[in-house]
Image (cartoon, rainbow, N blue to C red):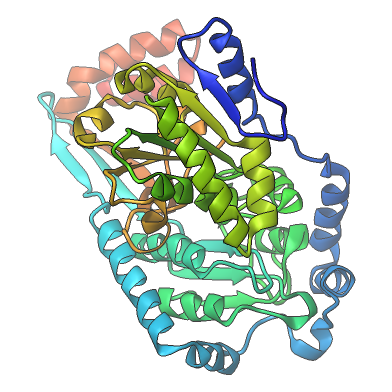
Length: 437
């Protein structure tokens, strides 16, 4: 049976009742959010109607900031000053991360396709970037510059010509690292607005903020709901849920290392999920003890402890090979394989946002400097979706070209299918070119 909710779950795959307990673990990822659709709908309509005036009103109300005094857009001088204010070592780390992220994403850029087939028909596929993208960045001192790099760099690599960033600045506070990261990544415009109203401005456009074609980036329930509501008018990346990590570890690991990895996601959000799968109950006990020790020394203890005690889990399996099926059902955002030979095991996994191989590859290295994107599918959506990439900022356009001979070869079949579907004008548009009116 599951322990009380105040303690991390302990599951044993070999005992009766495990299936039901595992279903409870799966259900933990079903997002439960407040229904804010009514409020968001009103905000979006207000921004659509009143534009900058609505932005100013909501920013004063929610962020206690007078845009009439500060302006909506950050001036270049402000951005330069913020970028110059960060410590040299931090700037160098940010630059290293940017170089590695750009290098990895440049390898993703696809080539156009073009050929003439056996019937003489010219066929092709051309990749074109989205023209304008809006990047939402959560604000305040807790904003993450790494997320700016992860969202902005793939867009620029794809060839997006205009990248507009919105970031709320409650009480005028902004993390200078966020502005430095935006400058480094080539963001073209930065605006000091946030919330559903910022999403509305990006989607509909205002006098100051021109509309974009796609909106990416994380946010709270209001931002997520706004993105859902404007989808169709603009594209969106995804609706992100709480962070997740699943660590598969054998007894040869240092328990303190594994405990730190589990808490690295727990400290993100009180409803983040951290799961350990191991084949040794004594090792699980040691990880639990180590986690308690880490928690007491973390500045993020309150958030991490709530997540760990209410949503953390440890699953005991007889053999680690048994973990693969469980992993695919969980479809975790992050999967660490802290085992002796992780590559063959990784090849068995069908559903995971990102996989980290071996004992010396903590998930946190992927958050910052590894290179692959850290914007990943959550809430089991890795079953059908992938992390952010260059492809999210590209569109495919197909190309078809027929000569008279090629149309003569394939046109009669098109005529027959059009007639079968009851679309005579379709049929005629082909037949008229074949002198078969």
